[in-house]
Length: 279
Image 1 (cartoon, rainbow, N blue to C red):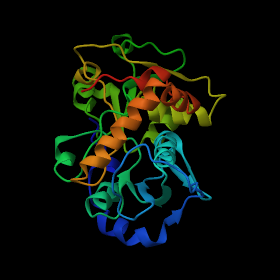
Image 2: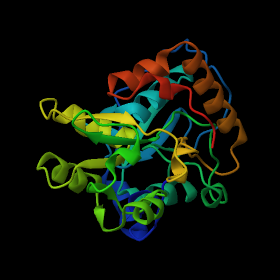
Image 3: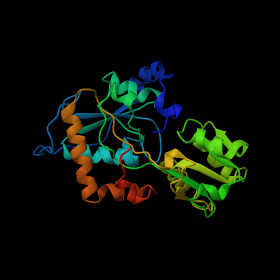
C-alpha cells in the first residue's frame, strides 16, 4: 500500500468538494434501448455510473468528454456491460475518496491501493491489477544491491522509503513528486529511480527517446515492499455490496478474456500485472 499524500490525505477535501460542480461532465455514451445489464445494482443516479478521479496518467484522465487511462478504460467497459452512461468528475487526488464517501460519486478511479483505513469509509473491490516497485534507468538492474553507493531517487510517502533510506543512507534522494524524480533522472542528477510501475510506464511513454527503461524489482529482504507488491482496486460507495459484486465480476471477466492485460499493455504497463498477487 502506497501512502503518497496525493492519494491518501484529505487536506484539499473542501476545495475538492467545491470543485465537483465545475468539473463534472457526461461522457459520450449511448445506451441501446435493448441493452441487458450484466449485473444488477443501484447507482446514485439511475442509468448513470458516477466516476471521480484525479488527472493521473496513465491510470486516469478525462478530456474533451473522453475517459481514458487504465482505470478509465476498465470503468468504461464496466458501464457499457451494465447499460449505464458515464458521469465523470475530475478532482485533486486528496478529494477523491471523500467524494465517494460523501456519496457524490459511485466509484473512484486512479490506481487506489486497498487499505484498512479506506475500508472504513468506502467499499473496496478485489485487486484490479498490480502496481509493484520498479527501478528506472538506462538498462537498469532489478537488483537494488547493484546500486550500492549510487544515488537513488524516489518520491516521499511510499512504503519503501524508510527501508531505502536505511540501506542507502544519504544516497537516497527524496522528492515531492514522481515528475521531479523523473526529471532528475533524465538530467543525470540521480543514477536510478525507484517508482511504482504505473508512474514509470506513463513517463516513459511520454519520452520514448529518453533511453530509459524500467524493470520490476527483485524480491529482497532489504526492501519489505518487494516481498508484498502493491495492488490497486476500485473504491466505491460504502454499503453497496451489489456494486462490489458487480465490479468484482467484471474484473474477473476482463481478466479471464485477456482484455485487462490488453488495456495495461496499451498504456505501457507489463500485461502480467493483470494477474496480481493479493497483498
